[in-house]
Each structure stands twice: as structure tokens, then as C-alpha cells.
Length: 319
Image (tube, rainbow, N blue to C red):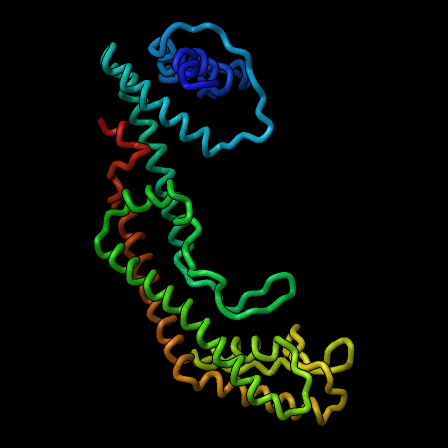
């Protein structure tokens, strides 16, 4: 359908969308939902079809995999046009005013739910990444809350949470997350290089997770937590594992495994003692404090209902 055809058929689309595709009903008006009456304000909504021009008739089309997000945006645009035309042509009735209030109430409820989700996402994910049994240390990319990846959700969060202190903290938080991402990469590269230099004169057949587990535990020790001693003989009975991860694949005797375990623990302590790891822990703690501060501001804002600001999705409902 080209744009010109769309303009001509808007009345049909509005009528089908508000009558056959979806209806807002009064649940108590009938025992079966399909027989229930539409609410008073929805009848007004349905009558707006005539404001788009003359109806010509439309056949339903079943879309197997609808893009709901796109449909919502389109519906919001049609809704805004309908309100503008209704107000210009016939003025706003009491029912129309109540309808706008109901939609604004639903929108603000959606905003509160979005903010609650966003607050949960205000946390730094573990530096230890497990993917299909593979272990790595450090984020593959700079962390960002899932809600902020969605442009519409990000817009709503920023327009309804108008706190200078919060967004000042947020900007500082983003800078520190980037610093963590960069520093973990530097630490990882330095420790791997150090391990290669130290292992060149040794008899062990080191596995890749020797360094990954050392980085993981080194960070834990640098944070002040107890060093884990989860060493075990792998199922193959050859080598040595740290937890579920193989760190060496040639040791066969208890004596060789004891020597290897001691070496690995010393390597971990060496990782924890580096200045870069200490800087990383300091950044990590600063990020945690900023997250708590942002959550506290957001919680107080929600409690006081100080989110009553228009965004692009609700500005027409405030008029």
C-alpha cells in the first residue's frame, strides 16, 4: 500500500482496528466476553473513524508474526491524529476528557513498571563470563542496562525521571563502567603475557582456564573475599581442575597435583596484588555506590509520584 492509498483508507483501518481487531469492554455487561458491550469511552473512540474520511470497506489480513512494537507506535500516531481532529471539529466532550485521563493513567502505570525494571538493571554484571561451558574474564562490551538499549524505553525513563542528581550520577556511572571495561582488558592481557613468560621453563601442560580462573579468583581476593580451594581431579583422571574448569592436562600423581595447586594459588595472589587489579576493585566499589545512589533517587521519585512530566508518547494526553 502506498502512502496516498493509506491516506484514503484511514477510516477503514480505524474502524476495523477499533471494532473488529480490538475492543475495550465492560466485563460485567455479559457472561461471555464476545457478547460484552464496549465501554462508553470506547464507543466514542470507534466513532472517530468518520473523522478520517469516507469508509469503503476492508477485508481482514492475518499476520502470522506481527511486529507488536511497530504496531503500538503506529496506533499511538493514529491516536494522536484522532484527538487533534476530534478537538478541532467537535470539541472535547466530557467522555473524551475522561478517556484521555484513562490513557494517561495507563501510560504512567507503564512508566512505573519500566522504572522498576530499570532499577533492577542498575547493577554491574559479573566479570566472569560462562558461555556454553567456556570460561572468560571481562565483559565483551561496555555494560548498559537492557531498558536503555530500547530507544523508546530510554526516552520514557529520561523524560519522566527528571532529576539532575540522578543523571549526573548516571553519567559518572557510565564513565566508570567504560573504565572497568578498558582496565579488565588491560589486566587480562598483562596477566596472560606474564603467565606465558613464567610457564616457558616449566613442565606443565597448562589449559586456557589456568589464567581465566586465576583472574577470577584474583579479583575475588583483591575484593577481600577468601580464596577458593576448589581443586579436584578431573573425570579423565589426568591433569587438575579448579571447580568445573580444567587448568592443567598432564599431571597424574598426587604429588604433581599438590605442586601445581600451590603454584596456581601463588599465581592468584600475585594477580590480586597488582596495582591494576587494585584500581579495578576501587572502580568496582565506586560503581556500586553510584548504583545505590541512583536507585535511592528513583525510589523516592516513585514514592512521591514525581514522574508527572510529558514524553513524546503522552504529551497529547496532557492538553
